Image (cartoon, rainbow, N blue to C red; front, side, top):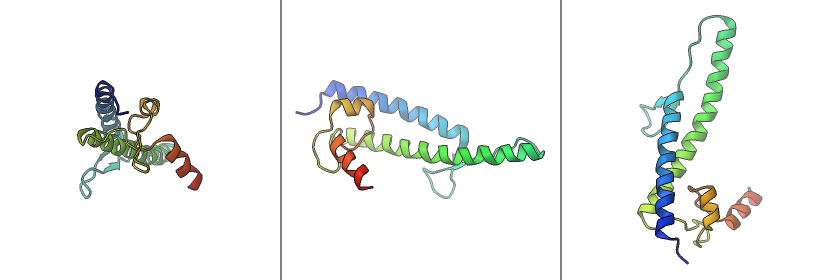
Length: 125
């Protein structure tokens, strides 16, 4: 049973909104990499020259690096999901090629695997 067109349109709208949000969050903590287009570089904050301010800068930068990686990964997943919608392949598991349950897609619209395959990957990894 193929996914309903209205459902796919709903997911597409949500994914586009998520992309805007992720892009804005990335822009707050990083700049686009001049060496690698599409990648970001976390910005190093400048709170001042006092020792406690320097420590806060390092901590904030470290946290921003982790957050940047997470946001970039989520953005890539959203982009892949939008591309699969455009290609007419949205909601198909990339491993077993069966339809992904609508409940899973509602919970995580950028998902590219069904629950069974995700469980297998988690157990193997």
